[in-house]
Length: 475
Image (cartoon, rainbow, N blue to C red; front, side, top):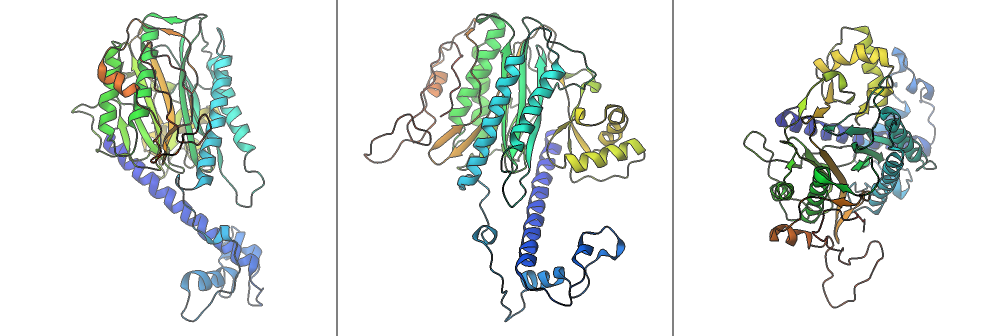
């Protein structure tokens, strides 16, 4: 999708999210009003409010009309005699200023990190790729489903981006249907990408693993070291007051130091509640043909930093549209679908996956094949295409979620790398200076620093610019 259209889509997405939150608030207020007010003899049958019949519209004197009168119209001199809890009355902050929001991000991160660990452990020769994807998705669904069970307000949770397992020169988004027979082989370079959410607060991660014993060497090690070192530099530069273009330029310089290219078209997005691809982005490769708006990072923002490095030219191609299986509903688009299978599939998608990306595996395969084409052709769905570099090129991906907290950048998703022995080392003084930066803000004043405890303001360990294989420890 062109960048201009992608930007429009994200704006519409954020507007949809705002509307959804407003409707949720109105529904909660209405339920609270109904649960606290004294019944009125003028009320209609409450069961009719939930009916699908044409006669279900609330009549004058119904609970809904009382609700509008008391809470929205608020005539002069009227005082609403309803006692509400603090939780219902207060408008909660939905960014990192809320400890509850931070907790949800970190809970989602803990789950997606363990899901990634599970999939990596199952990456063995002859393992079916579709089985690996299913295991990742099943684990995220199960574990997020166990969170926030005993709360009054229903909390949405689950997979925010389906598990993808992209091998060798395949760049991204390979998450095949159940009928696919693709398997892993010894020596494959495997990129695993996934995300989950709790209450719309998303934790995203991607990691590269090579199916071999012992250290990774040669050009495969160069690609992984380039992606990882670029990710470490990005972590240190994505901080309040910095510009997105600074990060783009830095990661390209790091990749060049390993004689690799950052893959074009990859965007690192700001994330918000129920928004996986927000307006603020970091463009992987800046050139005259692909531009994004300049933006400054701000405190209390959240980003998914996505780095993809290649030993090839970094200009991936779509080889087969039939490989595309991941889609996201375009919530602002409408069209009267002509084919029955398309209408059935789109109705199912609207119910199950109204906002987050999903895999066609979650749909009945035969109907999906028939119905998805018309939905995509009329822009009701946004596809995530499977892209490829040239055969023989090595491609590596590292993605992490970072919270821009008041005390510094907090990386919440990662996985330790294998031992790398790249053919190149970092000698550039500017890159070394970036890697020497910490990720935490130092305390002002003469107080002593605390050590080793989560949430303190102690400086993170700087990365050594040796082989690009630092263990990605979270603070």
